[in-house]
Image 1 (spheres, rainbow, N blue to C red):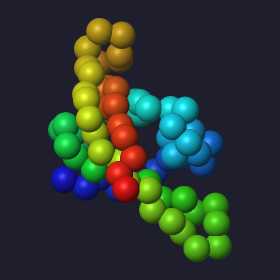
Image 2 (tube, helix red, strand yellow):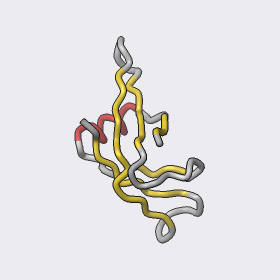
Image 3 (cartoon, rainbow, N blue to C red):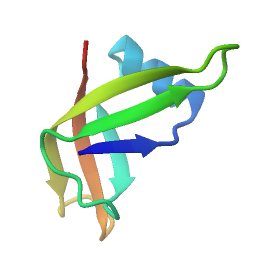
Length: 76
């Protein structure tokens, strides 16, 4: 499943550069391993999409109820 998500530009930059490898999200979309997260960069003249695959999902310990930590890797 593909999820179109909003993201702050600085967080997107950190994901694309590889500095950030986890995205914390409210689990209102029933995220699953193998899902695709599609983020759009609207800071440029031409919007550009970035696709990330969910490789691992953590919930529970250390996270507020209803939230998940999504480990992601950029798709080529």
